[in-house]
Amino acid sequence: MSWLDQLAEKVDELHRAGRLQQNGRSAEALPILDQVLAVSTDPTTRAYALVQRFGALINLGRIAELSTAMTAAENAVREIPDPYLRGQMHAFAALGSHLQRNLDRGVTHLVQASRALAAVPEGDSETAWGWHDLAMAYSYLGFHGQALIAIEQARQVGAAAGLASEIFAAPGIRLRNAVALDHQGDTDGCLRVLRDIDAELTRYVAIGADHMRPGSRAAYGYALARRAALGEETEANAAEWLTGGGDSVRTRDLRHLGHVCLTIAADRPGPALAMLDSVPVSPEILGAAEPARLRSICHAAAGDHAAAHAADRHAFRLAAQHIDRLRDGYLDGVAARLDAQETQRDAGRYGDESLTDPLTGLPNRRQLERYVTTMLARGERAAIGVCDLVGFTDVNARHGRHCGDLVLQRIAGVLNRVMRRGDFVARFAGDEFVVVLPGAGAAQAAEVSRRITAATSAENWQILVPGTPVSLAAGWSEVGIKGRTLSAALAAAAANRLPTR
Image (cartoon, rainbow, N blue to C red; front, side):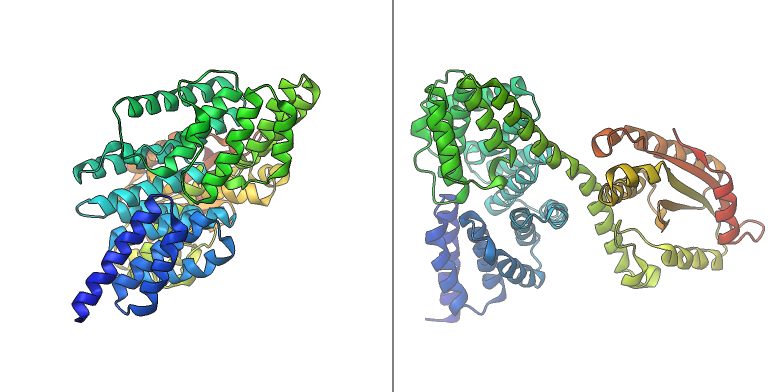
């Protein structure tokens, strides 16, 4: 057999393993991938196999093996100029980081996956699956809005490639959104989403759709069972949909909790509580608050309202801890950091890794000084803005340094987002940021200042640091006029600082 025939055979094996995983049979796919890796030396084939293998380990919940598998996949993909493969690898890496409780790293991979998949020139069925996997990663990390956008992208790319829309129904995304609403006290909102999932399933059954993924069964079944536990009747039989669905940890946990819900609906709260105690479930599937919320429903059904209230408070606290980590804040901060890392590759402009602030990813004071020195050497002028946080000491005192770091990352994201193309943003020191607007005067600086004010005011600081107001004080000056140096311009701008709100 020629090497071309051998390569074609390995590609067929990769496709077979991929189909098995799509059908919820990761345990069967894994030895096929291991065999491909054992005999193949082609870099692209190995990269695809390592990414698929990483995904299979995630599905099977083999967390102890994820770090090694993630590193192997990252190293292999780095050598392959394929944006789809990079996107899928980063989507899996986001899920793996989530399972390892590493939020910051997980969100970094989300941003990288989105950018890689958006760079695919022409979508095909593989790209559609990449968007699907990214949607799942968004959902598990708590970014429900972004998950819905990504799954719609999967449907559109899949439709262009001839794939049926129900393949990308992804009921688990809306299911996680529904239970998150319930954990936060919005049971009516939860029920509205669960009804929509029920109605969608009814439509698919009515048209005889036969392309539904097996992994969707457990999500539909749990949505039906959860709705029944909240006292509403469903058209479909939840118990039937809780059967099958593959070998993933997700399916196993949804099936178990689904039977807990059906036991509650059958007015058997005692056995339901015993079932909750008998089998631990992963907090990553539906959130750490879900077992506590089901426990509350059990106690309420048994008439023990004090215990139900205590369980509800516990569920709410767990959900609040999840919210307090502020995934959206991380998105802005990580995006800013990645943008800064891109500029680092232009050594002639910015220099090496030591010129970057490690928390926000923005250029640091040294990089700012080099940038302005180079600009002045060319005879150019610029507006200089000094922005610092008002009340930052109170943030650290009341909420701790971790929340303070999140506020700094959020501000870094806000500043990066409102700057014009070619503007420069740096973290100068502590809670102080400096922006440089090349060629700008007072009028342009005033317009940028208005944008900073609007963007800062639009942020929901109360979710991040409740009870502690956050605002910016900004002052402006100019550099490069009448021989004014950077130090003099910064001093003048600092003296002119006024609150932006």
